[in-house]
Length: 127
Image (cartoon, rainbow, N blue to C red; front, side, top):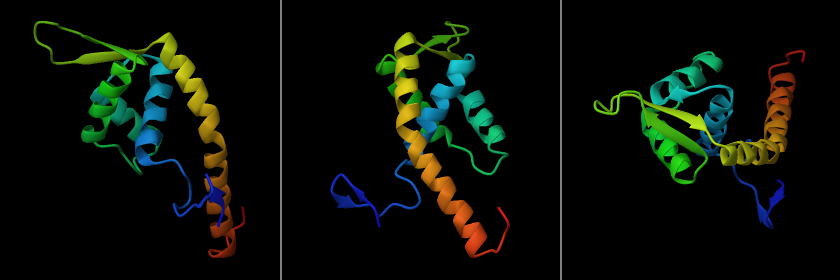
């Protein structure tokens, strides 16, 4: 078991929580183009081959948080109706995205190693 900040790491297989993962993915997608909340949810699900999808209850609070931190900026398509709010990444958001992208890389690499090892050792798959 590895040590993290002087303590045993009990989370498996990575130290990236679901919220941090979705935040990273939101910033990644907004770095490509503007989206609205449901489209972000659907796009994450599509890119993950519908194996997992974040809930609206996760997406919308994260969008509000990212906007309050200045990492994204939202605007209403029709301000008088307030039905669809589109988001775009800010310069500060791009800088933050670049930082967390580098921070999380080793955790994703570790997770991939663990999964490949399990598939090879336990399921006898050739990797």
